[in-house]
Image (cartoon, rainbow, N blue to C red):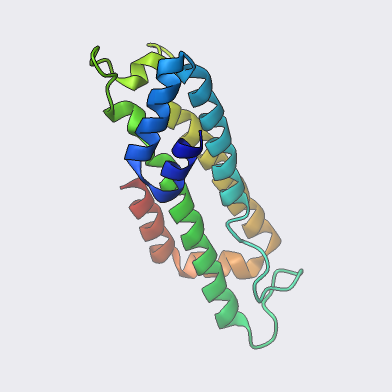
Length: 166
């Protein structure tokens, strides 16, 4: 599990593959993948939730401190960028769809996914989008500053989301 987690942290698919191969050999690939999906789905939701649509030059009322509007906007965009980076890292861990079991040449994905099951990435993506939509709605409702920053910076926000989808 440490190898898989290290591989996820460092975006090293070889480490992920080696760890998953051990689970496969032990006959525990399905439970390990279920654990990992739950963990990273939770982490992705937490990253979205703490993606930072709150303080950082912004007072509790949702308005920047006097003279802090520019700094607060920069902090908001920085946190949004970090959030997108974390989401990207979680979604791009696609080793299961690429690697095959030695000797049988069966994709690891087919060992943990059956026809008709939701795709692992779909499960994570759905949780992410629900959390992201909820946080954006909450941020817009709680802070006119955040709403204005994202509305005026919509091309930047759109570009960040587009880059994440690519």
